[in-house]
Length: 422
Image 1 (cartoon, rainbow, N blue to C red):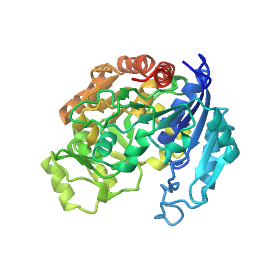
Image 2: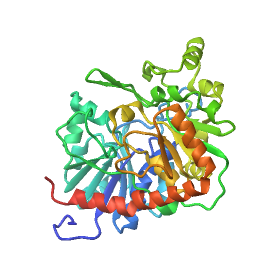
Image 3: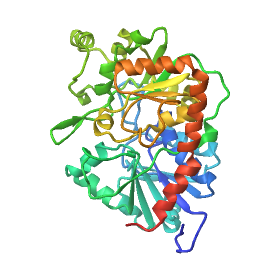
Image 4: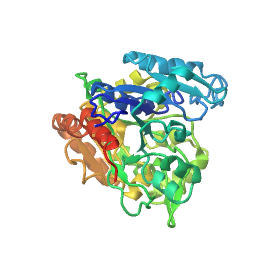
């Protein structure tokens, strides 16, 4: 591994990007970055967090008026980010650029200039930098694709801005470990990686409550289209499992959703059971929470359980297990995507029952991780976990240690990022 000087170095100065301040009410967004930051720091690297997305911070609770989703005052967002970083002894290792003024918080403008002058590697997590070309003074820029299939389709179909941002980087990684047809070629080599988990932050000896849970968005953005096919969001997949609670009673299935709902982002639904289709037709104004409650799911407000990164962690640690579907695009594209959230459940010793996205070639399935493709398989997997919980709990933690340990995942990622490129 080489540093900026070209000599072999065990300690690098590394920048990790993200959206922690922008989404301060979503603890899962914070942990998506923190697992990288803490993992790299514990490997001995000098790690900084930089948020320069060019996007206004969000009020996911609607603000005082209840319908104001854009925060024009970033003070609470900056304070949240400062508190998160200080909690882990990194209070002087962050920078946030508020795009409206514009203004740098944390390191400030002079600190950012020094960081760009001395950094060895930048990990552009989720491609969140608005202008990665402004960071080109850093010897190595690595793009971390956390939205496989959608990223590749958008680049291939000619979204110029995204393609330019992706092209700026020296090396490209994707959480989609099994990318293949029908995912289009983009002209980049997408190297497989997986979510790193700082295991020590997730271990717990606490007794879980008897509930299967997950945290999700109904829709995150509009569907995309490629080669005559539609690649949609989680709403598309969830509809075919809407009747699952009735098949696993008295097991409680809890879904944490934000109340912000972009109905215009929904796709047209297919493979919907007749009973579900009838309810949707009869109640066109119902929210996802209304629909879930009707079919005996337990919907909860994701803002309430995930407003702080500590609350988000506690929610996972206190769950018996996870049950979750994936975005339709991940399933249709057979990407091998596996959620960083699900990996956190595993690290807490909580089994996961998750929809198959094609990850069986790279992850062990059957104990700890149970996958499904249809509602009957999902019900059977839930009964299996409940029937031998101790075995599946132990397997979950063993999988986290073998496959998601940040020390293993990030050592490999940094070595590839800093090594010779073909």
